[in-house]
Image (tube, rainbow over all chains, first blue to last red; front, top):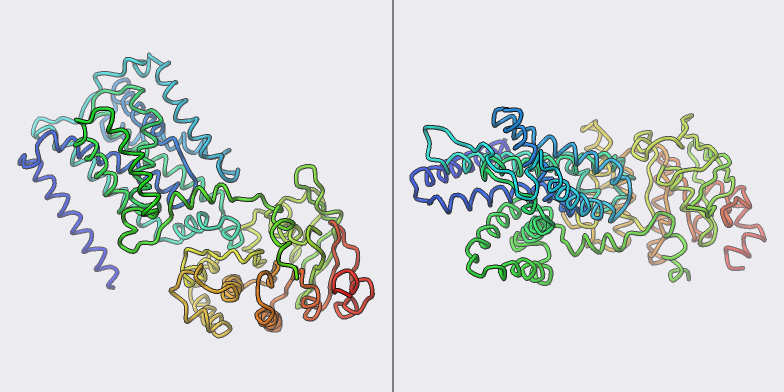
Length: 340
Length: 234
């Protein structure tokens, strides 16, 4: 009963907040520049949420979400330009294509233990980028793809539409992930992060849930890219380099691995910060690693950890990956000291 | 209930088990004892599907387990208390128990089982909302056992329940294992503490470098010269 009231109350608050934000943009209280920065910030937050699902909640490090973003963006662009699909279908198509890539990568990789996913996704991100450079018929090659149809209508001020769409998508992604993670599926996913062997022993189908989480993660990453293409109207392979993947990881770490609210706050905050610091030119790129170091040293569970949320952390993820012993190696090594 | 026949397990090229055969009957406590590296844990891992069997068969309630995935095996009623407890340290005691009931759909019966676990382990009820990692070693072992009972297993595989515990706690844990068995759950126990294991078991098998070298009534083995010399310190 009270849970239901809570859900309705939070839904109302979110809806009001969204409407308020949109009104602010509509009446140009938030200017065009700011609203565009906020739109990009929303897209970054969406993709970071996808990454948090696989790395923060499932405990599998993925380093190539810029690749999924690229797949989503280029697919949507192609669907708009070559197939003339309506906008909504093109965006959905981009996200689905990215999910397909995630599924195909996950299928062989997630059967293995430990750090293989990190290595493979790292390679995947780069391969996609190089592929985009070398497929000029489809992607415009290194010069980039121009003239992608953008979100426009005759009756609204231009920046309103992408802004409203992106924040609507962001809200939907948060609601979807929140419901998923509070279900028994979510419990299974988190138990894999906490202890894979124990999760197995509880009857969790570990491989299935890893693959499911990774595919959904790729879908959300692709959705971010798909929303990005018609917003910007131009794509170039170098937008999706390794540094972009690291940006998403830093958003997740700063917001707190395994924390949805934190990811949204950090995603929007960090993107905005980067815009404010534009006068520093290339030096602003130093900010990210500095933030990462500070977070890992002083607040490993991320900014939301300040509010008492005990979550996962990058430090724990790394030590988990390094400390993971293969099955059977335990019997001989661990216990010699304990025999009396 | 459980029949293992000519089980071979390899890690890469290294042969960990040589044609291991043994049997657990309904209602028994059977123990596998042996030194470090004898293959005791490997046997349990093979039964619950965590490592693949190269050859041989494992039958549980007339079902072949060697081709089944670990989560399917749990659904058959065969639960595993893994070595080193492996509780979910960053989840609460309650969430740990919920994970134990993960495969079950009958919400009402699950609720009743919580109460049973709490009567058996009152300490867990006191610490219901505490992070499991903050429990003491003994409490963690109790949680690991309680979590396993939440799946209503017919057969429980226990891997080194005495590991890292003070002697007093070890006796307590073994008392609990006896009670669980008396309540109708069959138990396959793997232990380095051979004396303790033999004192509560019905039958025992002795493993040495991946082979079963001795078997028999637990009491008889405890009194046999060979076992005394090799595993009971005189």
